[in-house]
Image (cartoon, rainbow, N blue to C red; front, side, top):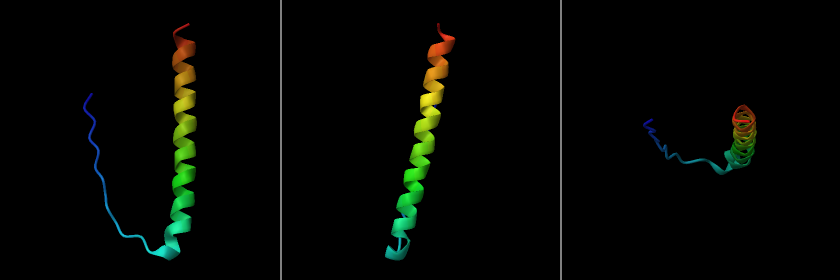
Length: 47
């Protein structure tokens, strides 16, 4: 499997920083939950 990562660099105005920080936190929480569920399913399937 080949993975490509593209990084986008943008300038964020200060008035949007708090909202974007909160959105990034919430997105990270979703990814962490998805990874946890996937990990548990993988371990349960291998038993």
